[in-house]
Length: 127
Image (cartoon, rainbow, N blue to C red; front, side):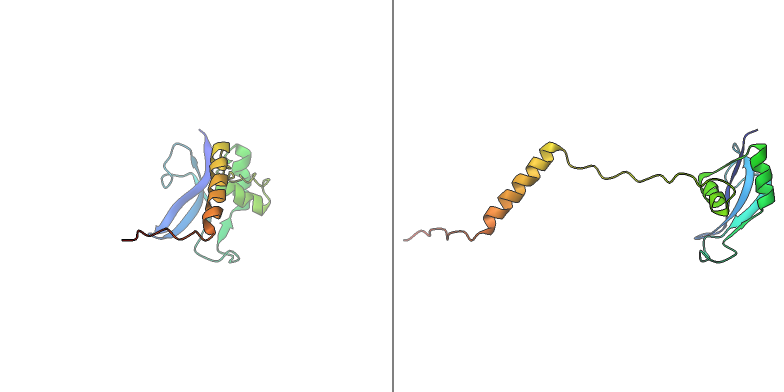
């Protein structure tokens, strides 16, 4: 049986509250779990003591048995000093325009600069 330490959502609509649980990976997110290991309340300020509550001894036990933490829980455990901090994935940089597009942009800049000069008045038809 593969075990995972993850969050199970509770609370009302638009007011999330999470239990940190150890559960079989096949069970639903908010379904059956083996043991409750703590709580996470994202609605309180970051420095509030009730924001994250962990049962350190039980978490150490489940990690030694082979339970794997989810990404968010691994981050919490890294901040608590129980594990190494997970690597932060960098967001990909927006790719630069291709060569053909860059040529068009340069041409447009050069073309846009020329009409900025005052143009000669158009001749009017005399009757």
